[in-house]
Length: 230
Image (cartoon, rainbow, N blue to C red; front, side, top):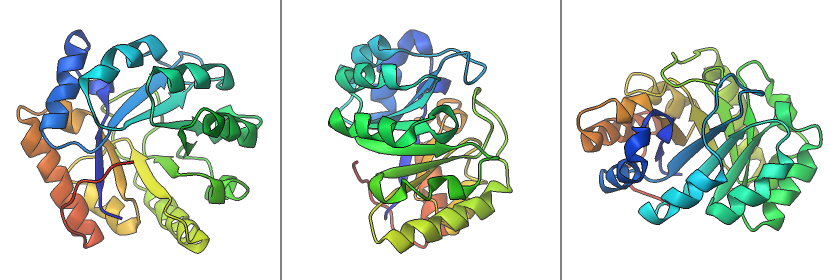
């Protein structure tokens, strides 16, 4: 799979959110990553479905919603209706993970499963063949601008092997500390989809920031430079 760059709007200027999303689309982003935090499962509070509904008209790109909330099921339908294309939920937040994934599919959306840095890859065993994306957190979730947790590279390799064994086109996403200095190693380990917040929205030139990430990912993966959709 070709690398996907998904800017996280957690690092965008909230006063100009629609314009910021349009700007990164124009700059070459592939997806938009929408981080939802509840100040319960993670120590921060961000966006609800109404914000997603408000920004959906500002981009034609797929919107990848990452639910860092607990409980989660009650919010799935709202985010699906608001315009999500893919909804990811945390293993750690879902006591009935398969039921949550079924609910996402019942709402017509692609499914993602998220693992925190300390959660072992084995947590995917019973659900992996039925998901569209696995997200491995490369920081502890809750805040933008954290440093990449390097031991997760070994888990990326493990999950890459697990995905390959299914024979299905499941994307392997990472989120946290993704910069031009870290993206190559993550791509070499097997990641193909990259959430980047500060590395893009903290740059003066969004286009060059995205291009630098894409070059690093392509070099790490030995791949070309193409844009793809969900």
